[in-house]
Length: 182
Image (cartoon, rainbow, N blue to C red):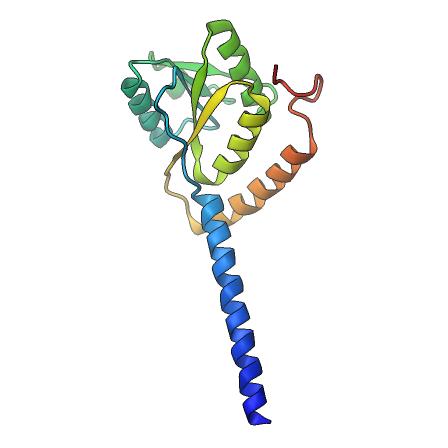
């Protein structure tokens, strides 16, 4: 009997190890997903709060692409961001990722942009990529900007982004007129 118990515990330990490995892979893949290449962007869009890390990456990509414009979604219209001459601030309404996709699509249509580099932080990238590919209606490269995040923030973001993704999957691109895609 003792031999059978040891086999059961070994199997349980193996299953727990496999489950932990899968969970870690999913969490790391969700928090640190790969970025898209930005070889031919003609505009840079910065999502969410304009952190110094996001602005630095936006400026680098804009310079690499020949000085393309940088648009920043800044629902709070913070002066330190919006008073910088190389940034164009936009206030999405609603102040959501879908609202950002809608306002960026309007700008792209008016200005004639065809390929956007969209910047956000790691935990938001997967959901932002889904929403922009589904709702934006033009070529989009979504770029992860690494920012220092505490463990508490990471745990919160996994839950928040998971619920946000469920909402994105269950709702249309726009609350009033369906998908924004042409």
